[in-house]
Image 1 (cartoon, helix red, strand yellow):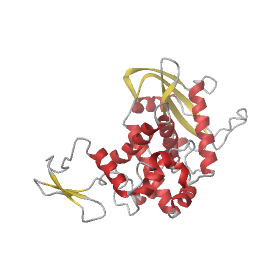
Image 2 (tube, one colour):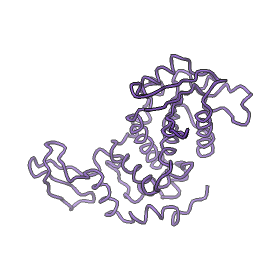
Image 3 (cartoon, one colour):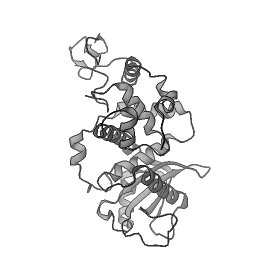
Image 4 (cartoon, helix red, strand yellow):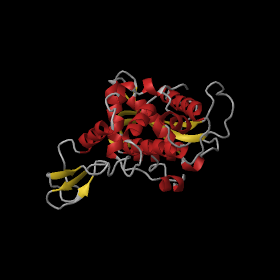
Length: 300
């Protein structure tokens, strides 16, 4: 994948070409209606600009905070311009690997890997808050099957449950793909109970008409296609993915797919930036310690 930093970032990064421009954008997203103290809810403050990251001191309780607190950018030592470049590259149709990102924005591989996982975590947490609602289809499927050879067994494919909302024009809108933890890489599909667990955890059953497809020969075809496209996309970009962080990469794919639904490109970029501000960062220690065998309902 050939990427030229001077051209690929242009639509987004030309607007946020400096640290100040990036910081002002984050401040506007953090406090869209003006400053609000996180400790006492007072709305007046003093802005302290003696440090690299501006501090806001509450006029009532003197609590100091910054626009980066509680975001994926908290405690970062990187220029915000590199973060905004990473967000731009994350939105490429097939994403970007940590190795390629490290080369383009000139950071270490470990730093690039952590940046991308922080973005994935924000997308996953944001997605978990939004239940499927309306006309909902749910498939029992396999991630890792070869679309060109569907007749062959796939002993290393992982069971997933995939759900989507369908518009009146029969187009897929919001999509969720969740691994079945106890069936990672064993080639077996989710059963009816595991589909029910997914529906209870990820569908607003009170406001939805749900149709589930537990059998391999009777699946909702458009949703099955998305699962296969996810495998192709992630395989082409990341070559090989272990089971520990596979759910995060699936969240990335479905999140990016949703951001790429018809609409203005700037809106897509602003939505991703908003997610980064709305969700606290996951730490490196949390990432490497995360256990893959969490429940299907909690997986995000």
